[in-house]
Length: 86
Image (tube, rainbow, N blue to C red; front, side):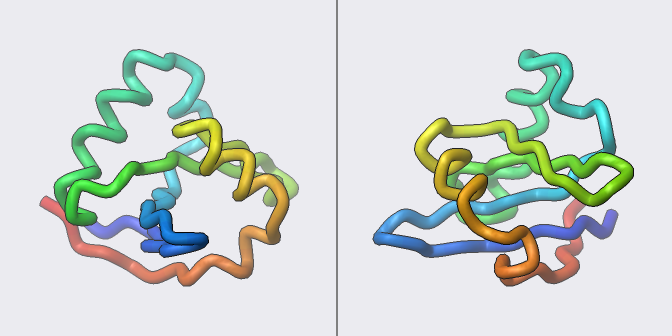
């Protein structure tokens, strides 16, 4: 499976941002399971899930400090790439 994700190190904190389908963060239990499933693919760093609305505005789900940081920057500044995960 191919996913769009960004592996980021900012202010000494490493984390991954993973694009998910719209609505994937509506159920926090399922969202946490998704985070846990992706984490090993990024070396165990915290994973933030990102979904976008029809206008491209992102919504984040994850650690509050990381989400707070992400809401203050443009999503286009993240180092996006395609990742192959099983």
